[in-house]
Structures are given as structure tokens and as C-alpha cells.
Image (cartoon, one colour):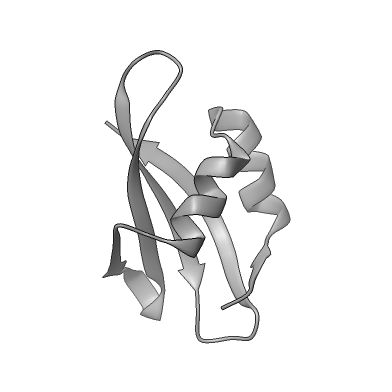
Length: 77
């Protein structure tokens, strides 16, 4: 599946300090995909950040289009 990264998602990666490699990994090989609001899905995987803590990185994706659209990305501890 191919993905289009929205401008908002790009801005959020930078603002939140999420490495682009983490997003690429979540999209290509997510540990889990869960249903989100309004028919969107959350692609998610855990990653070890530079601060030594493990966080769940989530990408909210509208995958009913071609290419799928990454709307935003964030992490949870």
C-alpha cells in the first residue's frame, strides 16, 4: 500500500520529535492496526526513543483512498 503524508502529519512529526524512520516503519510493518473514529485506522508500533523510553507511535490513516492518507502522527507513553 502506498501512503501520502499530509502537511499536517509532517508538521506534527517535527513538532513532536518523532523520527521519520519510525513513521515509515509503522506504515510498512505496524505491530497493530486498530479502528479509529470516522472510519479511519490507527497504525501503531512501539519504539525506543533517544531518551531511553519506549513509546507507542500512532499514525492516523484514511486508508480507504489510493494512496492512503496519513492525517497525523503522535506518540503515547
